[in-house]
Amino acid sequence: MLCVTHHFKPRASAHSIRVFLFALVAIGISYRGAAQDTPLISGGIGFFTSTNAGSTSYLPITEPLLAAPLGRRLLVESRAAVLESISPNSDEERGYEHAHFIGLTYLQGDFIASRHITAIAGYYLVPFNTYNDRLTPIWIGNFQDVPLILPLGILSSGSGLGGMLRGSAIQRNKYSIDYSYFYSARSANEQFSAHRGSGGSANLYLPEQRLELGLSYDRLLQGKHENFYGAHAWWEPRDTGFRLRSEFARGDHAQGYWIEADYRMKVFGGFDSVAGRLEPLFRIQQTFRRDTIASDGLPLVNTQRADFGLDYNLPHNTRILTSYARQFSATGNHNVWETGIVYRFLFPTWKEKQQ
Amino acid sequence: MRSGQFLFGVLLLASVSALAVGAQNGTPVTAPARKATARKQASQPQTDGERVFKQNCFRCHAEPEGFSPSISGTIVRHMRVRASLSQRDEEQLLQFLNP
Image (cartoon, rainbow over all chains, first blue to last red; front, side):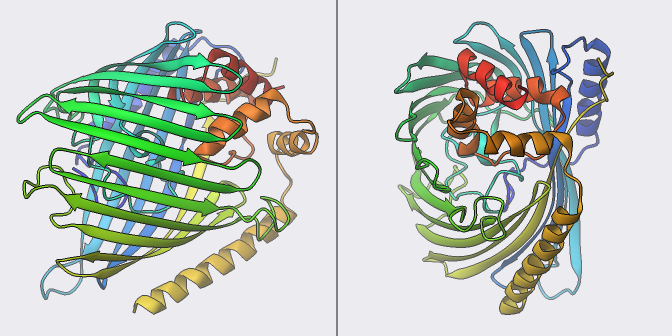
């Protein structure tokens, strides 16, 4: 299930916490690492508000992340989401209703098999395009809302259950190519919900131009089989603080794109100056229905949306996110106002003895 | 209502940033953060590890401030998997984060 704001897969169960804690304890027991390889706990704590068409909802959330190396080649990592959604009652009732969700986003084991291959097993993020795999953590995303086309290609839940191969295929001074290939089994388990599917991606990176181009493909292999195609282009001109990201995705029944630009105002004294911590943002996105079969999670009618944001990167890993969006569609136009604050934490699971 | 919330957001932004800047001026910087700052100042010309950081990590996120050196290897391995870094990049990035 996808939430309106960040890409959560809420499954209301304390089982998630038990699985997460069990992983932590198991890793602690088996840990025998080098001085730099202490398992870490990272993640974000955030509080978001969103006023959509005049209705304001609140979302306190924690996303803990665990990463623990086991030996020289293994890494176990997991991310979870714990959130409380507080929104106005529907109809004419006064007051608010709230719901809480706890869910694992991923829990995977990574084995570095060679310099070109990392084998991944478990519950992993589907590597279709870039957003699901890279930008969904609350301490990374520039906007609270995920792009409208995010549901395309991520096999409903955003996670796959099975195996994946990924790594750096070629690295030269002027370019590099990385790849991923995955197969996911069907799972109706509450914690590890996944669809049967298969696919992969390939990305070309040009370091001199700071340009990344990528292609993705996957196929849903249950129910009515569907193909999904994706492409992305990212560009960060050297030493400017400017980033341009874009994605296109196409499914059997709908397609769309988003383009996002952000700029850290480093010209005013560098990244750590008061002005340099400001980050104006802009994103434009469109979705197009190819037919009326709405099985993919995209809006039921063609939709356009423009987001204007202003983030502020405070010291001590804290960000303030603000944005205004105007969404246009045949079913009506509306405004979305959003504010939020996110703190990113990162620390060892235990203190290492002094050498 | 909406403009009021926007105004609230702007005021929140202004007040928290003022507090944070004040706190930054008055709070001692942790050792890793100091080291990172010194590294930035001494990074002319750019080291290979810094180049790897800017080309790969900064594509998605800013540099986290002030983490313990005892987790630098874990961070790099985590990023090797998530960002499909090559072995060479992994080694250079580890040297940059924990010289």
